[in-house]
Image (cartoon, rainbow, N blue to C red):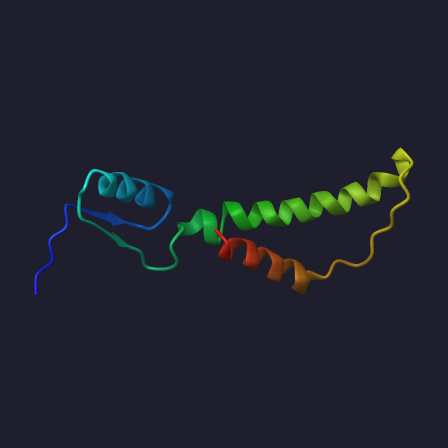
Length: 94
């Protein structure tokens, strides 16, 4: 059985998804070929996970600096398992 596509996007990252979506809007038959998870490196292993970790670090620094601004706050130990789970949940929601 042969299949015909007007466009085959290689990679399910932001570029591949964007071009496939636009082609589909124009009535083209499209396929996306992705070796791993849709979203590509940025969403699954690069930009987004890094930004979630950066956000958590920023919160920790804000708590550490709070007393200098008259806000009483103390930070406990970081629960790395919970942070990683929150990061993965965030990514899964994209």
